[in-house]
Length: 378
Image (cartoon, rainbow, N blue to C red; front, side, top):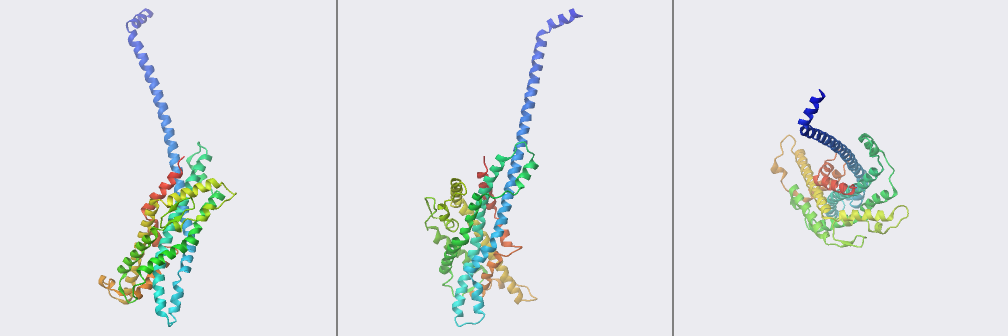
């Protein structure tokens, strides 16, 4: 028996050795592939956890931005309505004063100025908050990543991101820069819009025959003049440079750039400010902001058209309102109260179609995501 086995081994030695080498190699390859697959699965799981954590934090940042925006709308409304007090003139007109023609002329200018200022101010505020929140959000995400345990489960990581952490003095000081828009910024904005309105609307007689489509064209003409008249104005950014940006002067607080403090990392603060200035002076910011303003203005003019429709419906109770009746021209004086009321709709509490239009601007989402992604890269 042993002799037979030995003879068989001698006869098939090469085959047996080859088979052994092949089996060993196959086993080694199997183990290597299994190891690589295991590492790949670990990387996939880690990448999933990272993406889920990042997506959750980004969405939380967007929600915080909207909540902050909604919180700041009432004081913005109060500021605009105090600077452009149409109600005071309306009350004076109700008393049939001797200078009512002068008051109507003033109401004409205030009505157009207040509505356009309200649109530009709300869009500018929302866009600036998007920039601020996503820059801070990106930095906070990196801080959370550095402080987190790499072996933690995704549910634990989400709970960690959900925790309310006290805002640092640097973050508080940085976010407080939005106050400039409510102070010097809104004063400059009202003044510039008022100049554009004076150029376009002031020459128009109160008896001029117009419909809501004409008023819509008028508002866009004012916006165009506002853009042209402001785009060439140079001003200092406070960072050793000048800009010719229409909107930056309503947002930037130049004095804040020079402010020194010992309560937080001054170098880090100046770095974040510089990054913020670079973004809001960038052409992309201007493009997205202008898209917001135009879409919101278009929505406002459509809403005004609906107001005209309701007015005709009330006059024609029990009968249909035809399109030719809606497009029928009327004295500008009759349209001024409708134009003025649009600013109240813009700042309306509760269900607000204007804000839905603003939040639905697609380019805002991609713009905000790009900022967050840029500042959350390790």
